[in-house]
Amino acid sequence: MAQPEKNTKVYVEIVRQLREMINKDGLKPGDKIPSERELSERLNAGRSSVREALRALELLGLIETRRGEGTFIRDFRGNQLVQLLSTFILQDEKAKDDVVETKNMIEVDCLYLAAEKFKEDEIKRLKVWIDDHNFEDEEFFRKIAEQADNHLFYRIWYILNDYYDALQLKVSPAEKADYHKLVDSLETKRGDLILERYRMLRKMSTE
Amino acid sequence: MAQPEKNTKVYVEIVRQLREMINKDGLKPGDKIPSERELSERLNAGRSSVREALRALELLGLIETRRGEGTFIRDFRGNQLVQLLSTFILQDEKAKDDVVETKNMIEVDCLYLAAEKFKEDEIKRLKVWIDDHNFEDEEFFRKIAEQADNHLFYRIWYILNDYYDALQLKVSPAEKADYHKLVDSLETKRGDLILERYRMLRKMSTE
DNA sequence: CTACTACAGTGGTCTGACCACACATATCCT
DNA sequence: AGGATATGTGTGGTCAGACCACTGTAGTAG
Image (cartoon, rainbow over all chains, first blue to last red; front, top):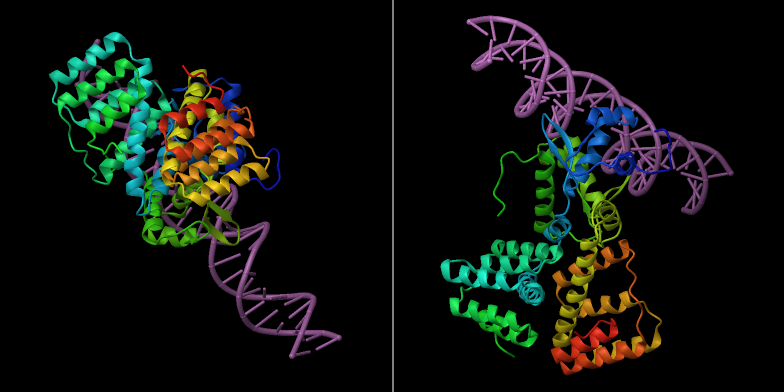
């Protein structure tokens, strides 16, 4: 290395230099970065070390590689951090209950957010959609999560929903009337009412 | 989801198998995982591929390697991973707002859960702790997140908190009286009151 | 001009070779 | 016997080179 620099492992140093390179050259998502062989030469490192750095960044979803073409910077708006971590962490027995509990609360959060951010016509369109389609519960809440207009929440909900599937926790489908009532409550923007309607739809005890 | 792709790269498959191994053998933080050479043999893969997987997990902070000793499962706390990610991601204002919004709502969720699950003496101990220590806001909510007794929520909060730090979004510290009032509201188990007290503590508009 | 071929470049993977370091064991000297 | 030292084995860290599979393109044949 140009600068032997302490005990830092080579691949970590390469990650650092890549970040520097991206900043300095103003590389944007979709842009191509130098080939592994060129990097290994320019940074005075073995190709395998370069690969260790690239693979790590790939697993993080920061870059994308296409065989025969090259390595590209990725549009990392969709960060898979939570995804990765939770897949490693979700293991014990209690996890199942936690998933249910968490998903329910996140959905309510999304409902609150959606209520604030909903536009008139979007609510109308949603109600028409409810009437015109035979949909899964999942589809309805995906729309809600989108309307919440918060990428992190969307991400979190999406993952929780995946776990729901993975754990084979099927949500009991609700009546269309229940979805309508819920959407109506969104228009009022009243938190307590939204919560009540959600619990009704999920057939949860009102405590 | 998760259909077995045949085009999966070897290192990704190794990550998967490692996760499986950790689950099956019930490995906990601090435990040692097989050596790179043994893994490469057991999984029928080259050592370099095994290393690509391990390096990626290391950069994520999920494992720790010590030369001459071996590779160990780590106590997954957010840490450097988030720093790394945040330098790549989360640059625009919208993402920043999302973090704030999400963290606030998750904290309220944790408060609700904690209110339900709190034991008498634990609340007492918390109040004593508030009086006896000069703490950061972060420490208080870490305790709340723990009391929520939902691993997923705890993880999510932890990550969001790390994002907060990484984005240098310092929470304005609140008065001890505000924390006391908030804890008092937990005892009532009244959602509306808890929310009100939280907003007061965070100096948020009551809308 | 089109269609096919050949080639160069790229990522994907494996193997083998060293090195640096940590730990356990055996060995030696007092 | 006891402590210090040498040695051996196992581990991660790194590199070089060899193939393979795939892509895009320049060149060629029709």
